[in-house]
Image: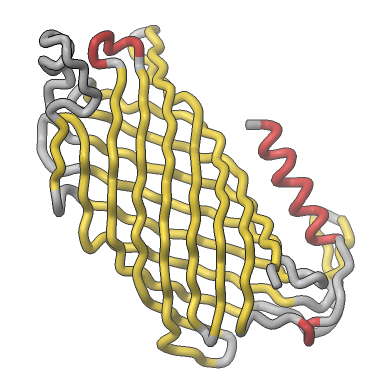
Length: 280
């Protein structure tokens, strides 16, 4: 965790101090980027089918994506993974779960309103999350595999905070020079229209091993419109002289399944730094 925060801080300082070229050359009317992201994903989860206790932990987060802006429209395709341990401590006993989360998402936004430096876009996003969890404390129920597929209605509000002239400021008595460059602050909300789950039922144990016909997905159930999912994302993007960009972001993603005794709940709090490389 310390290494990630150190890299995060170093890149931020480099971004603030690096001298860039003229603002007039920055344009995102028609741009394509490859996005590489790293960061920290703080998770909190519980699976009522195995335990009502909450597990929390910090996972390493990595992401690879493709971003395209054209005529005001915005498209995003991304693959991400978060890997690490989540722990629970009760009565001086600590249990650990190894957690791996893989997510594939695609979104498209359309401009509907623009005024001065403000821009509002709406559209949709499809996200598919795959979970692999292993907790030896649950013995025969140690391994859990789940799929969460969600169709979102999305809205994104952007604020152009670019400076066209050189500015000077101080941060904790440290002088900083802000060269003319394009900057954008944006906030996005994703609201689930349809949330689907594919996971094992209340009884993790099944009969496939007993009948000598092992099946990982034995007794798994596909549930349509099950539970709910909500996501928000706050991003600060700076466009550089070479037309690449650096983005600092915070993302919140929370979801739960339907049901009662076998309900699953998880919240993700992601701190991210992204490098956007412009493609020809």
